[in-house]
Length: 368
Image (cartoon, rainbow, N blue to C red; front, side):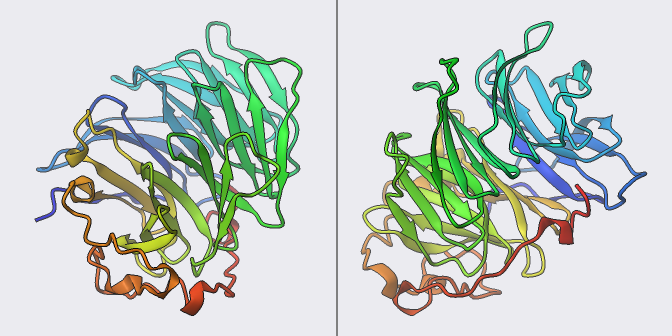
Protein backbone atom coordinates (compact mmCIF):
# COMPACT_ATOMS: atom_id res chain seq x y z
CA UNK A 1 0.00 0.00 0.00
CA UNK A 2 1.44 3.33 -1.03
CA UNK A 3 2.21 5.78 1.75
CA UNK A 4 2.29 8.71 -0.63
CA UNK A 5 -0.15 11.58 -0.02
CA UNK A 6 -2.96 12.15 -2.47
CA UNK A 7 -2.28 14.48 -5.42
CA UNK A 8 -3.08 18.13 -4.83
CA UNK A 9 -5.21 19.47 -7.71
CA UNK A 10 -5.00 23.08 -8.87
CA UNK A 11 -7.15 25.07 -11.26
CA UNK A 12 -4.08 26.79 -12.72
CA UNK A 13 -0.77 25.38 -13.92
CA UNK A 14 2.04 24.74 -11.44
CA UNK A 15 5.36 26.14 -12.57
CA UNK A 16 7.53 25.15 -9.62
CA UNK A 17 7.35 23.68 -6.13
CA UNK A 18 9.75 22.83 -3.33
CA UNK A 19 9.78 20.82 -0.12
CA UNK A 20 10.64 22.45 3.19
CA UNK A 21 14.15 21.35 4.27
CA UNK A 22 13.21 20.36 7.82
CA UNK A 23 9.42 20.08 8.05
CA UNK A 24 6.67 18.20 6.22
CA UNK A 25 5.72 21.17 4.10
CA UNK A 26 5.58 21.73 0.36
CA UNK A 27 5.13 25.04 -1.42
CA UNK A 28 3.89 25.39 -5.01
CA UNK A 29 4.20 28.46 -7.21
CA UNK A 30 1.48 28.79 -9.85
CA UNK A 31 1.02 30.42 -13.21
CA UNK A 32 -2.21 31.25 -15.07
CA UNK A 33 -3.41 30.24 -18.44
CA UNK A 34 -4.27 33.88 -19.15
CA UNK A 35 -1.58 36.09 -20.51
CA UNK A 36 -2.51 39.35 -18.89
CA UNK A 37 -5.17 39.37 -16.21
CA UNK A 38 -5.11 36.40 -13.93
CA UNK A 39 -2.53 36.44 -11.15
CA UNK A 40 -0.41 33.84 -9.46
CA UNK A 41 -0.64 32.61 -5.90
CA UNK A 42 1.70 30.60 -3.72
CA UNK A 43 -0.09 27.66 -2.06
CA UNK A 44 1.57 25.92 0.89
CA UNK A 45 0.36 22.44 1.87
CA UNK A 46 1.26 20.22 4.79
CA UNK A 47 1.65 16.69 3.48
CA UNK A 48 0.89 13.64 5.60
CA UNK A 49 -0.15 10.10 4.79
CA UNK A 50 -3.72 10.94 5.85
CA UNK A 51 -4.64 14.19 4.14
CA UNK A 52 -3.33 17.47 2.75
CA UNK A 53 -4.31 20.74 4.38
CA UNK A 54 -3.85 24.30 3.26
CA UNK A 55 -1.82 26.42 5.65
CA UNK A 56 -1.66 29.73 3.84
CA UNK A 57 -1.79 31.29 0.41
CA UNK A 58 -0.75 34.69 -0.88
CA UNK A 59 -0.50 36.55 -4.13
CA UNK A 60 2.98 37.82 -4.90
CA UNK A 61 2.70 38.98 -8.51
CA UNK A 62 0.28 39.69 -11.30
CA UNK A 63 2.48 37.64 -13.62
CA UNK A 64 3.67 34.06 -13.46
CA UNK A 65 5.66 32.76 -10.53
CA UNK A 66 8.54 30.93 -12.19
CA UNK A 67 10.40 29.54 -9.22
CA UNK A 68 10.23 28.93 -5.47
CA UNK A 69 13.06 28.00 -3.12
CA UNK A 70 13.62 27.83 0.64
CA UNK A 71 16.77 29.14 2.27
CA UNK A 72 18.81 26.33 3.91
CA UNK A 73 17.08 26.45 7.30
CA UNK A 74 13.60 26.84 5.82
CA UNK A 75 12.77 30.08 7.63
CA UNK A 76 12.49 32.11 4.43
CA UNK A 77 10.73 31.28 1.18
CA UNK A 78 12.04 32.99 -1.95
CA UNK A 79 10.21 33.34 -5.25
CA UNK A 80 10.86 34.79 -8.69
CA UNK A 81 8.34 36.13 -11.17
CA UNK A 82 8.03 36.89 -14.82
CA UNK A 83 7.74 40.58 -13.89
CA UNK A 84 11.51 40.42 -13.08
CA UNK A 85 10.96 40.62 -9.33
CA UNK A 86 12.32 38.63 -6.39
CA UNK A 87 10.28 38.17 -3.22
CA UNK A 88 11.14 36.78 0.20
CA UNK A 89 8.43 35.59 2.58
CA UNK A 90 8.19 34.29 6.11
CA UNK A 91 7.62 30.58 5.47
CA UNK A 92 5.46 30.10 8.56
CA UNK A 93 2.99 32.90 7.84
CA UNK A 94 3.41 33.87 4.21
CA UNK A 95 4.12 37.46 5.21
CA UNK A 96 6.11 39.39 2.61
CA UNK A 97 9.53 40.30 4.01
CA UNK A 98 11.20 41.88 1.00
CA UNK A 99 10.58 42.57 -2.67
CA UNK A 100 13.10 43.58 -5.33
CA UNK A 101 10.83 44.89 -8.11
CA UNK A 102 13.25 45.03 -11.06
CA UNK A 103 15.93 42.58 -10.05
CA UNK A 104 16.78 41.78 -13.69
CA UNK A 105 16.35 43.57 -16.97
CA UNK A 106 14.66 40.46 -18.37
CA UNK A 107 12.17 37.99 -16.84
CA UNK A 108 13.80 35.70 -14.29
CA UNK A 109 13.64 32.00 -15.06
CA UNK A 110 15.59 30.26 -12.27
CA UNK A 111 16.51 30.69 -8.62
CA UNK A 112 19.05 28.76 -6.54
CA UNK A 113 19.74 29.19 -2.82
CA UNK A 114 23.47 29.28 -2.04
CA UNK A 115 23.50 29.79 1.73
CA UNK A 116 21.54 31.65 4.38
CA UNK A 117 22.41 35.03 2.88
CA UNK A 118 23.00 34.45 -0.84
CA UNK A 119 20.95 33.34 -3.81
CA UNK A 120 21.58 33.07 -7.54
CA UNK A 121 19.06 34.06 -10.20
CA UNK A 122 19.16 33.51 -13.95
CA UNK A 123 17.02 35.20 -16.59
CA UNK A 124 15.62 34.68 -20.09
CA UNK A 125 18.65 36.29 -21.76
CA UNK A 126 21.25 34.22 -19.93
CA UNK A 127 22.32 36.71 -17.25
CA UNK A 128 23.15 35.26 -13.82
CA UNK A 129 23.25 37.37 -10.67
CA UNK A 130 24.55 36.44 -7.22
CA UNK A 131 22.62 38.31 -4.53
CA UNK A 132 23.53 39.12 -0.96
CA UNK A 133 20.04 39.25 0.54
CA UNK A 134 20.99 41.01 3.76
CA UNK A 135 19.32 44.40 4.04
CA UNK A 136 19.61 46.14 1.70
CA UNK A 137 19.99 43.38 -0.93
CA UNK A 138 22.91 43.88 -3.30
CA UNK A 139 24.30 42.20 -6.42
CA UNK A 140 27.59 40.57 -5.41
CA UNK A 141 28.38 39.08 -8.83
CA UNK A 142 27.00 39.16 -12.36
CA UNK A 143 27.83 36.72 -15.17
CA UNK A 144 27.00 37.18 -18.84
CA UNK A 145 28.28 33.94 -20.34
CA UNK A 146 25.03 32.60 -21.80
CA UNK A 147 23.18 33.81 -24.89
CA UNK A 148 19.86 32.16 -24.08
CA UNK A 149 17.66 31.44 -21.06
CA UNK A 150 19.11 29.94 -17.89
CA UNK A 151 17.31 26.63 -17.57
CA UNK A 152 18.77 25.33 -14.31
CA UNK A 153 21.46 25.83 -11.68
CA UNK A 154 23.03 23.74 -8.94
CA UNK A 155 25.44 24.77 -6.19
CA UNK A 156 28.33 22.84 -4.64
CA UNK A 157 28.70 24.49 -1.25
CA UNK A 158 31.94 22.70 -0.37
CA UNK A 159 33.61 24.10 -3.46
CA UNK A 160 31.63 27.39 -3.49
CA UNK A 161 30.88 26.68 -7.13
CA UNK A 162 27.73 27.45 -9.09
CA UNK A 163 27.00 25.34 -12.17
CA UNK A 164 24.47 26.67 -14.68
CA UNK A 165 22.86 25.27 -17.83
CA UNK A 166 21.29 27.21 -20.66
CA UNK A 167 19.11 26.87 -23.70
CA UNK A 168 22.17 27.83 -25.74
CA UNK A 169 23.79 24.48 -24.93
CA UNK A 170 26.34 26.05 -22.58
CA UNK A 171 27.33 24.59 -19.23
CA UNK A 172 29.01 27.33 -17.18
CA UNK A 173 30.95 26.96 -13.94
CA UNK A 174 31.38 29.91 -11.56
CA UNK A 175 33.61 30.10 -8.48
CA UNK A 176 31.53 32.43 -6.30
CA UNK A 177 34.52 33.24 -4.06
CA UNK A 178 36.40 34.99 -6.86
CA UNK A 179 35.70 38.41 -8.29
CA UNK A 180 37.61 38.03 -11.56
CA UNK A 181 34.56 36.38 -13.22
CA UNK A 182 36.74 33.83 -14.96
CA UNK A 183 34.34 31.11 -16.06
CA UNK A 184 34.84 27.56 -17.32
CA UNK A 185 32.38 26.52 -20.01
CA UNK A 186 31.42 23.60 -22.20
CA UNK A 187 29.37 24.26 -25.34
CA UNK A 188 27.12 21.56 -26.81
CA UNK A 189 24.90 21.38 -29.87
CA UNK A 190 21.88 20.63 -27.69
CA UNK A 191 19.64 22.59 -25.34
CA UNK A 192 20.50 21.86 -21.71
CA UNK A 193 17.32 21.88 -19.64
CA UNK A 194 18.06 20.51 -16.17
CA UNK A 195 20.97 19.79 -13.80
CA UNK A 196 21.91 17.77 -10.77
CA UNK A 197 24.98 16.19 -9.17
CA UNK A 198 25.82 12.56 -8.37
CA UNK A 199 28.77 10.56 -7.01
CA UNK A 200 29.10 12.77 -3.89
CA UNK A 201 29.04 15.87 -6.10
CA UNK A 202 32.00 14.61 -8.13
CA UNK A 203 29.90 14.43 -11.29
CA UNK A 204 27.36 16.77 -12.88
CA UNK A 205 24.47 15.47 -14.98
CA UNK A 206 22.44 17.53 -17.46
CA UNK A 207 19.22 16.56 -19.21
CA UNK A 208 18.68 17.87 -22.71
CA UNK A 209 16.19 18.66 -25.45
CA UNK A 210 17.35 15.66 -27.50
CA UNK A 211 16.72 13.25 -24.61
CA UNK A 212 20.42 12.62 -23.97
CA UNK A 213 21.96 12.77 -20.51
CA UNK A 214 25.38 14.46 -20.40
CA UNK A 215 27.90 13.68 -17.65
CA UNK A 216 30.91 15.74 -16.53
CA UNK A 217 33.59 14.81 -14.03
CA UNK A 218 34.09 17.66 -11.58
CA UNK A 219 36.91 19.92 -12.72
CA UNK A 220 37.04 18.47 -16.25
CA UNK A 221 34.51 20.83 -17.74
CA UNK A 222 35.74 21.12 -21.31
CA UNK A 223 35.15 17.43 -22.00
CA UNK A 224 31.89 15.53 -21.66
CA UNK A 225 32.64 12.36 -19.69
CA UNK A 226 29.67 10.45 -21.10
CA UNK A 227 26.65 11.06 -23.30
CA UNK A 228 23.90 8.52 -22.69
CA UNK A 229 21.02 8.13 -25.13
CA UNK A 230 17.76 6.38 -24.44
CA UNK A 231 14.98 8.79 -23.51
CA UNK A 232 12.40 8.96 -26.33
CA UNK A 233 11.75 12.64 -25.63
CA UNK A 234 13.34 15.66 -23.96
CA UNK A 235 14.59 15.38 -20.38
CA UNK A 236 13.03 18.50 -18.88
CA UNK A 237 13.68 17.78 -15.22
CA UNK A 238 15.71 15.39 -13.09
CA UNK A 239 16.79 14.89 -9.50
CA UNK A 240 19.22 12.72 -7.59
CA UNK A 241 17.67 9.89 -5.56
CA UNK A 242 21.02 8.64 -4.30
CA UNK A 243 24.61 8.88 -5.48
CA UNK A 244 24.05 6.34 -8.27
CA UNK A 245 20.37 6.83 -9.12
CA UNK A 246 18.36 9.53 -10.88
CA UNK A 247 14.73 10.28 -11.55
CA UNK A 248 13.99 11.93 -14.90
CA UNK A 249 10.83 13.55 -16.23
CA UNK A 250 9.96 14.79 -19.66
CA UNK A 251 7.55 15.40 -22.47
CA UNK A 252 5.82 12.00 -22.35
CA UNK A 253 4.64 12.41 -18.73
CA UNK A 254 6.67 9.53 -17.29
CA UNK A 255 8.99 9.60 -14.29
CA UNK A 256 11.82 7.19 -15.02
CA UNK A 257 14.26 5.56 -12.63
CA UNK A 258 17.78 5.65 -14.06
CA UNK A 259 20.84 3.98 -12.53
CA UNK A 260 24.28 5.26 -13.45
CA UNK A 261 26.47 2.56 -11.88
CA UNK A 262 27.95 0.19 -12.87
CA UNK A 263 26.19 0.89 -16.17
CA UNK A 264 23.67 3.46 -17.35
CA UNK A 265 20.30 1.73 -17.29
CA UNK A 266 16.55 2.38 -17.12
CA UNK A 267 15.23 0.53 -14.05
CA UNK A 268 11.52 1.27 -14.45
CA UNK A 269 8.76 3.84 -14.12
CA UNK A 270 8.22 5.64 -10.81
CA UNK A 271 5.16 7.64 -11.85
CA UNK A 272 2.96 8.75 -14.72
CA UNK A 273 1.30 12.12 -15.27
CA UNK A 274 -0.32 10.92 -18.50
CA UNK A 275 1.01 10.86 -22.04
CA UNK A 276 -0.51 14.24 -22.91
CA UNK A 277 0.87 15.93 -19.77
CA UNK A 278 4.63 16.67 -19.77
CA UNK A 279 6.46 16.73 -16.44
CA UNK A 280 7.82 20.17 -15.60
CA UNK A 281 9.49 19.60 -12.25
CA UNK A 282 10.56 16.72 -10.01
CA UNK A 283 12.05 17.07 -6.53
CA UNK A 284 12.98 14.82 -3.63
CA UNK A 285 11.77 15.66 -0.13
CA UNK A 286 13.87 15.93 2.98
CA UNK A 287 13.87 12.55 4.70
CA UNK A 288 14.87 13.75 8.15
CA UNK A 289 17.69 11.22 8.24
CA UNK A 290 15.35 8.30 7.46
CA UNK A 291 15.59 7.29 3.81
CA UNK A 292 12.54 5.02 4.18
CA UNK A 293 10.45 8.19 4.46
CA UNK A 294 11.68 9.49 1.12
CA UNK A 295 8.98 11.17 -0.93
CA UNK A 296 9.23 12.20 -4.56
CA UNK A 297 7.17 15.12 -5.82
CA UNK A 298 6.38 16.13 -9.38
CA UNK A 299 4.24 18.60 -11.26
CA UNK A 300 3.25 18.86 -14.89
CA UNK A 301 0.67 20.01 -17.36
CA UNK A 302 -2.10 17.96 -15.71
CA UNK A 303 -2.48 20.69 -13.02
CA UNK A 304 -1.67 18.27 -10.19
CA UNK A 305 1.12 18.27 -7.65
CA UNK A 306 1.76 14.55 -7.30
CA UNK A 307 3.65 12.53 -4.71
CA UNK A 308 5.33 9.16 -5.08
CA UNK A 309 6.46 6.93 -2.22
CA UNK A 310 9.96 5.69 -3.07
CA UNK A 311 11.10 4.54 0.37
CA UNK A 312 11.41 0.93 -0.79
CA UNK A 313 14.10 1.98 -3.26
CA UNK A 314 16.38 2.65 -0.29
CA UNK A 315 15.89 -0.79 1.29
CA UNK A 316 19.18 -2.63 1.53
CA UNK A 317 17.64 -5.90 0.31
CA UNK A 318 15.77 -4.47 -2.66
CA UNK A 319 18.55 -4.98 -5.19
CA UNK A 320 16.39 -7.06 -7.54
CA UNK A 321 17.78 -5.38 -10.62
CA UNK A 322 21.47 -5.64 -9.77
CA UNK A 323 22.30 -7.73 -12.84
CA UNK A 324 23.25 -4.88 -15.14
CA UNK A 325 23.64 -6.06 -18.72
CA UNK A 326 23.42 -2.83 -20.65
CA UNK A 327 21.08 -1.85 -23.47
CA UNK A 328 19.37 -5.26 -23.94
CA UNK A 329 17.26 -4.85 -20.80
CA UNK A 330 13.56 -4.20 -21.25
CA UNK A 331 12.80 -1.57 -18.68
CA UNK A 332 9.02 -1.78 -19.02
CA UNK A 333 9.26 -5.32 -17.56
CA UNK A 334 11.33 -4.22 -14.55
CA UNK A 335 10.35 -5.00 -10.98
CA UNK A 336 10.26 -1.32 -10.10
CA UNK A 337 7.64 -0.30 -12.66
CA UNK A 338 4.89 1.36 -10.66
CA UNK A 339 2.30 2.05 -13.36
CA UNK A 340 1.41 -0.64 -15.86
CA UNK A 341 -1.13 1.37 -17.81
CA UNK A 342 1.50 2.53 -20.27
CA UNK A 343 4.64 0.86 -21.54
CA UNK A 344 7.96 2.64 -21.40
CA UNK A 345 9.45 2.85 -24.89
CA UNK A 346 12.79 4.13 -23.62
CA UNK A 347 16.05 2.78 -24.95
CA UNK A 348 15.31 1.20 -28.36
CA UNK A 349 17.34 -1.90 -29.44
CA UNK A 350 21.11 -1.48 -28.96
CA UNK A 351 20.39 1.62 -26.89
CA UNK A 352 19.90 3.80 -29.96
CA UNK A 353 18.05 7.07 -29.89
CA UNK A 354 16.93 8.70 -33.10
CA UNK A 355 13.63 10.30 -32.26
CA UNK A 356 13.66 13.99 -31.41
CA UNK A 357 10.55 15.51 -29.93
CA UNK A 358 10.87 19.28 -29.77
CA UNK A 359 9.28 20.45 -26.55
CA UNK A 360 8.40 24.09 -26.75
CA UNK A 361 7.29 25.42 -23.39
CA UNK A 362 5.40 28.21 -25.11
CA UNK A 363 2.98 25.67 -26.60
CA UNK A 364 1.41 25.32 -23.17
CA UNK A 365 2.69 28.17 -21.01
CA UNK A 366 1.96 31.01 -23.41
CA UNK A 367 4.43 33.88 -22.97
CA UNK A 368 5.69 32.96 -19.52
